[in-house]
Length: 151
Image (cartoon, rainbow, N blue to C red; front, side):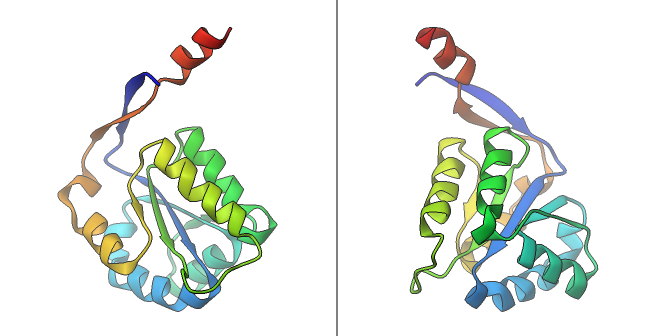
């Protein structure tokens, strides 16, 4: 597929997602990085977003709960180029009923080439990177060129 570029803004749109077993760890990470995170636009699946807003006081736009379609809502925002970073503390040792949605979310984030952290170490690298607060150009699929070839 042909590529084009997209510029991620200095104030990123960041999705925060966590499986139930990982919610306490995400909350701890958010609290540790609250000062940086408050300079960005935050989104989350329902239960996670409610918890983060309540426990940290940060403004978080909540989707519906992940198993009810929140993972797909986050994926749609990624494909619409409305999200720039995905922080997803997932539990690789426990299968969840909505595993296909989880796989689809990670797949769409990869397709649209956005930074993704699936664990604390990678999340730390992303949030501590100087790029988190700079405009950054990334390559993405050229969907218009793709459509033009198909019609």
